[in-house]
Length: 201
Image 1 (cartoon, rainbow, N blue to C red):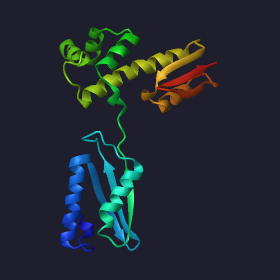
Image 2: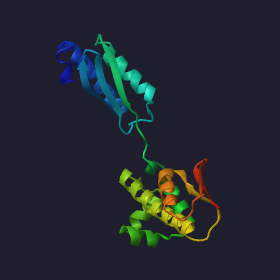
Image 3: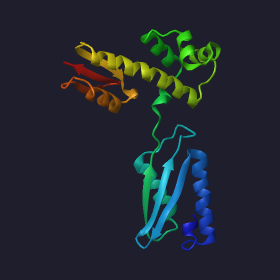
Image 4: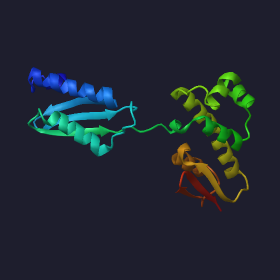
């Protein structure tokens, strides 16, 4: 807000700061004044991980920034919105882990051995007796992502032909990159619901 000290009155700056602070407390919105020139004011508005279920869209962030600063700035307000993008690991919960353990035929002792985490803690998370932190969710997500990749690479490297499915949250860009490194030249990759569908001719 220091860049506005030559443009706004002290009272107006306090008002803007208070409103920005309310947005931070309620919706985890951050405002950064990038520049103030003759053409107008340029502001970055970014939403970090929401404190509530409210996730603002690109257009909504533009509106908020223009509304907040436009009441005090005569010139144009240019907003640079950065909407919150949810981590793919947010899908992880106890049932998700159990589903993937069954799919890849992995026992709890294998998870404990490969992660170095004792079975008591793992069981509490998987059976949802203890909430998972974001770090724990990321750990489980990347643990099974390795299995998904290994499974896909095995099928691409062998003589398998036909359709193969992998969950979309593991990343279509990664799938395309892996396919490009194989001997298969006519593989067709499409999205189907929650899955990435791969046709190996």
